[in-house]
Structures are given as structure tokens and as C-alpha cells.
Length: 219
Image (tube, rainbow, N blue to C red; front, side, top):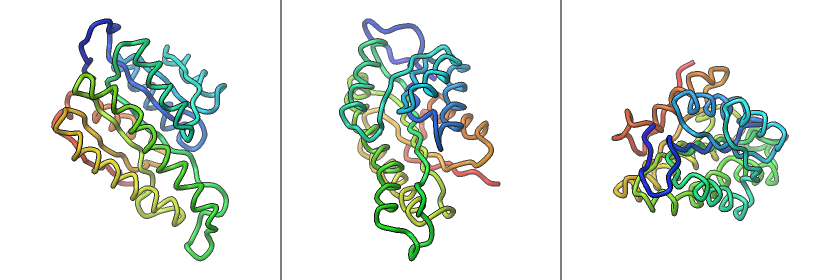
């Protein structure tokens, strides 16, 4: 993972991992550990203070209490990270799990649909929107979004996953020319080691030419 140079920068690249508890917690924690092992200064953001602090401590990182659906808290997260470290090099956006009621189309309530779109798509949008001004200051950075299942799960989760992919590709096309890359990962049930390795690849210099890509995993 490359470090963005700049006045006042602390040593080492800075990576923010959003979502280290709940549904995305195992994946987010694995990504945080992998980023730390690769030499990054890791910031864990999560609405669950106890779980988030535990993961942050385990990687020698910083925890910032953040509700991913509160746009002001999300903006404050990236502002705090930038002010503390002088830059942001990589971001991983996890997702939360579906509420009860997400299933086949005829069995999914409108409330369940909206809850899934919020937790799995709107939260990713708010994170991407909030971090962009800081990445643009240095003209580089990598954002990895967890899209979730492509064809499995309830109808709302599948639609949200497609939305994350579309959002990722739109941002990649728009901001790629500025040196800011956006890529997505499909869920890898039970194999968070593979997911973490893929996230590290997309966040690092080895994938410098990869933008707007979705990596999905075989069983």
C-alpha cells in the first residue's frame, strides 16, 4: 500500500476500515488485520464501540465511533483521520446484514427493502462521498466497497449489491482520471482470508491500473 506524500504526514500509509462488527464484522476485522500486516496505520470505524475498539486494539490502530448512516458522523470520521495523519490512502467499506423479512420479492416488506438499501448501499455512498474531498487533495487513493451477494440472499440484498457495483463503477469512471480508484468485492462466505487478501491487493500498488473492477469468489 503506497503512502500519499504531503506536509505533516505521519509515517506509513493510512487505511480506514468501516464496518468491523455485525454482519461485516468478520470481513472488516480480517481486512483491518491484513492492512496492518502490510504496514498501514489502520483506523476502524463502527457503530459498536466495544467491538470496534477491540479490533482497533488488536491491530494497534485507532477507533472512531461512527454510524455509517449518519452523514455528519461519516464526514467527521474522515476529517478526524485526515487531521490526525495528514492523508488517507485506502478505504474499505463493509456492509451490515439484512433485517428479518428480506427474502423472495413477494415475501419482502417495503420496510425490509428500505432497511437493506440503507445499510448496504446508502452507507457505502455516504462513505465514498465523504472521503472523496480528502483523496482529491492528493490526487490518489483506493476505495474498496463490499458489494455482498450477486445472486444469493433476499431480493433486497441482491438489489443493493448491484447498486454498490453500479456506484463503484460510476465513481471509478468519474474520478479515475484524477488518480482515485474505486473497486468492489463480492462476499466470500466463510473465507474472509481470501476477501482480505483481495482487499489488500486492490488497496495496494500492485493494482495501480485496476479501476472499476468487481472481484467475485468461487466457492
